[in-house]
Structures are given as structure tokens and as C-alpha cells.
Length: 52
View 1 (cartoon, one colour):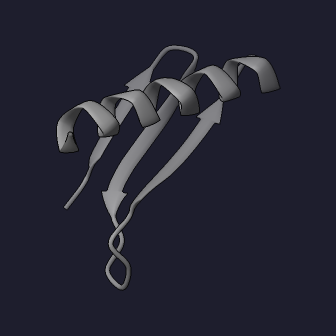
View 2 (tube, rainbow, N blue to C red; view 1 turned 90 degrees about the horizontal axis):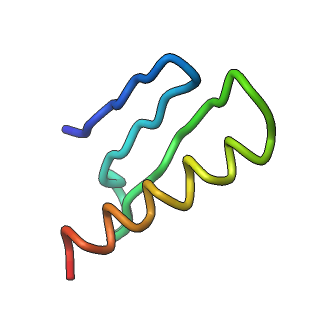
């Protein structure tokens, strides 16, 4: 399973890979590429904190 977080300005989905020992991050911003980069960075920080 995974987690999908939806906001007014975009969404992020986090899920473990079924074939590798990694988490996959999917994201979409409705604002800009900069906002998308921020969403992805924050998602990675969340995953890093959880698995640390």
C-alpha cells in the first residue's frame, strides 16, 4: 500500500516498489514546476524521516 496526499494545488503519492527496496514518489502540481519540485522534496523528507 501507499499514501496519497491531495491539496488544493496538487497531490503526492508515495508507495514502496514491488520489485526494489525503494519508495516511489509520484506528484503533480497545478501551479508550476517550482511547486512540483517543492512537493517532491517535501515528500522525500517525509519518507526519509519515516524510514530513518
